[in-house]
Amino acid sequence: MATDITFEQVNYSYQAGTPFAVQALKNINLQIKSGTFTAVIGQTGSGKSTLIQHLNALLKPSSGTVTIGDQVITNETNNKHLKPLRKKVGMVFQFPENQLFEETVLKDIAFGPQNFGVSEADANELAKRMAGEVGLDESLLSRSPFDLSGGQMRRVAIAGVLALEPEVLVLDEPTAGLDPRGRLEIMQLVTRLREEQGLTIVLITHQMDDVADYADHVLVMGHGELLKQGTPREIFSDPEWLTAHQLGLPSATRFAYELQQAGFEFETMPLTVSELADEIAPQLGKGDDRHE
Amino acid sequence: MAIIKVEHLNYKYSNSDTQAIDDVSLEIQTGDWVAIVGHNGSGKSTLAKLLIGLMAADSGKITIDDQELTPESVWQIREKVGMVFQNPDNQFVGATVADDVAFGMENRSVDRDTMVTRVNHALEQVGMLDYKDREPANLSGGQKQRVALAGIIAIAPKILILDEATSMLDPRGRQAILQVIQQLKDDLNLTVLSITHDINEAANADRIVVIDDGHFVEESTPSELFNHGKQLVEMGLDVPLPEKVKDALQERHIAVPESYLDERGLVDWLRTSRLNK
Image (cartoon, rainbow over all chains, first blue to last red; front, side, top):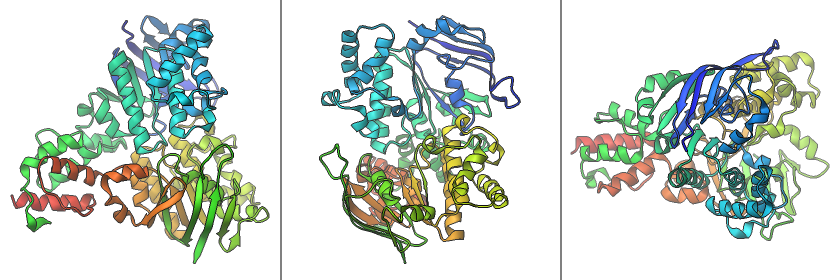
C-alpha cells in the first residue's frame, strides 16, 4: 500500500498566540513518494526537526494541510484519530537511547506493539525478530538496556520503532555520536529496510557523504522555508548556492572542485570517491618512481 | 608544565567483568590540545568523567594544576575545568539561553555587570547572541551544543574538556566552533582535551592519544596517526579523504605515494602526476 506524504502550504509557529511566538515553518509545499529515501538537510535551527514532527502529527500545522496516505492532518484534527498514523510512521529521535526504560531489551522492544494492542506473546515474537533485524545478538535480549554500549542502545531503540511495523521510518540524525563503524552499520541497516521491506525513509542528516551515498531525494531547509529540493546530483551541482546557505558538499565533490582548479577536467562532478577516481584515473600518469 | 597528570589509573564498572580504564598514565602540558580517540565503548568518556571527579577511580592518581584530585579538592578542581558533554540536554538548567550561560558564573559568585558582559560575549563567540532570550528546550541539537560551549567560555576555565561536543553540528558549524576554541586556546593559553570521532576535530589537536579496551595503544601527531589508513576505523576514526582517494586510485592501477598526504599534498601530487603523463 502506498503511503505518499504531501505538505500543502504548511505553516507552524512555536508558542503560537503568545508574544514569544516563533514561526518555525513557512509555507512548506512538498511531496515524499512512497518507497523513496529522502534526506532533509539544512543548518542547525533551520526547521528540519519541526518539519519531520509533522510526519506523524506530533506537531499539527498552524495552517495548511499534511496528507499521509489517506489521512489529512490540519490544525483542527482531533488527537483521538491519530493512533493509526502513529503506527504507520515510525519516529527515531535524536539520542533515542534516552527513551529506553524497561528492565530488559526484549521488554523494551515489545512495549510499542503491546501499546497498540498486540498480545504479549506476539509482541515478544515480533521483538525477537526485530532485534535480529537490527543486528542485536540474542544473548542481549535478557540484559538491561542500560548495560549496553551507545551503539547497541541505539539499535534497541530503532528495533522498538520497527516493532510497530511502520511503512515510513523517520530518523533524526540517527548516527550522531556513534563511531564511524557504528555509523556505517546504522546506515546499512536503514538501506536494507528500504530495499527488503519497501519502507519509505526520511533522514535528517548533516553528513553530506551519507546524502550522496544513500538518498534519492533531498529537501534543503533554511530559516523555516523549503529552499530547494531535488536529487543529490541537482542539489550538489551548485556549490556557490550551498556555500551561501552555509551548507557543505560531499567530501569527494568538494575535492573534485579543488582538482578542477589544479587543471583536472570533469564530465560530471563526482558525488563519491569511486566516481572521483573514475574521472581522474585516465588523466593521470601511471605514477613511476619520479613521483615517489 | 604538566597541567594534567594521570598516574596508573584504574576503573571498573560494578556490573562489568572488564576494566573500563586499565593502568592509564598521561601527561598534558599547559596550552596543549590533546585529542582522545577510540571506538564506542573504548573507555574515553569514562576517563573524562574520572578526570573531573564525576566518578572516583579504583586506584591511581590524578593531579590537575598541581593539585591532587581528592574528595576534598574536587570542587576547587572543577572551578578550573569546563566540560561540554555530547548531549547538552543533560546540562541545561536555565529558563532562557542567557540564564543558562550565566549559571556557571552564579555558582562562582561573579558580580552582575561582569556576568552580563561575559554572557553576551560568550554567546557572540558561538554565534548565538540572537537567541539569548529563547528557551533552551526549543533549540536544535547543534544550537544546544553552541550554548553549552558558551556557558563554558563564560567561566574562562584553564582546562576545557570536550566529550563529543561537536557531534550534532553541521560541518561548517563544527569548523566555526573549532576555530572559536582554537582562538580561546591561543588567547588564554587554554588546555584542551577533546574526545572525538571526528577526524577534523582530531586534526586540530597537537597530539592524539588512541585508547582501546581501557588502555592507551598509541600516541602520535595527527599526520603520523592518519598514515594508518583503513586501520583508523578500528580506532573509532574515519579514514581521511586523501587516503580513500589513494586507495580508489590504487584499485585502478595507479601507483600512489605510501606516506600520508593531507588534501593539499594530494592535490599537488595529482597535479604533478597529470602533467607528467
